[in-house]
Image (cartoon, rainbow, N blue to C red):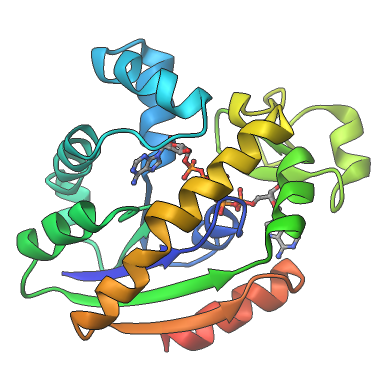
Amino acid sequence: MKFLILFGPPGAGKGTVARKIERAISIATGDLFRDHLKRNSELGQKARAFMDDGKLVPDDITIAMLKERLEQPDCQQAELIILDGFPRTKPQAEAFLESFPEAEILTIYLSVKDDVIVNRLIGRWTCPKCKRTYNTNLHAAIIKGGNCVTEKCETPLERRPDDESEETIRTRLKVYHRETKPVLGFLREKKLTIKRVMGNKPPETVLKNVKKALG
Ligand code: AP5
Ligand code: MG
């Protein structure tokens, strides 16, 4: 199997980039949790409080949920699987590498400064149906209408609860620096290839540079 780990802080643009990479299945653990929440599943109930506070969902829940997703037939046949938002802790990275010892894995680290991120996340609007994200800084005219403009979607846009307060955004950033960023060092120790792409450029430039890094 071939994986691309899209690594980076909250709001780095992981979801924005992942959506534009052709011939790949993109799995965002945050989206899997939000789908569980919407269905009111037991797993969703367990994850809710952590997500609303900007904290990480415990590893056992996250790893089991991702494993289940990766066992589905579309993943077995995929040319490339993009992991958006996983692994976020050392135990998650260890569990992943143990499960896929033969996999070809590339990590792309989207780096963006904290203050840029706060501004981005405060301005983010998301389509709950097709998951496309918009931003008041980039798409002010579209957001005024309030509906997703993706063809045949037209769903009213929503703000994610974890984007609603600057305090929660700052907690997510703290958690990222404390628990997630060190995972890069762990992946490096395991001799995985890590390529850095500056995420503070316009979205088209970021996408072009990610595709170049992918080869
Ligand atoms: P998750 O949904 O993964 O959130 P996140 O990591 O905080 O990342 P985001 O989705 O906020 O950012 P993104 O990098 O996808 O940016 P986007 O493309 O939207 O996780 C949510 C929660 O779930 C976590 O807090 C945790 O509780 C839980 N969770 C998830 N995975 C977990 C795990 N593995 N373990 C434990 N818990 C887990 O872009 C952001 C905005 O910027 C958008 O408005 C976009 O339009 C705009 N934008 C994008 N690119 C650019 C650009 N180049 N220039 C300007 N604006 C841009
Ligand atoms: Mg995302």
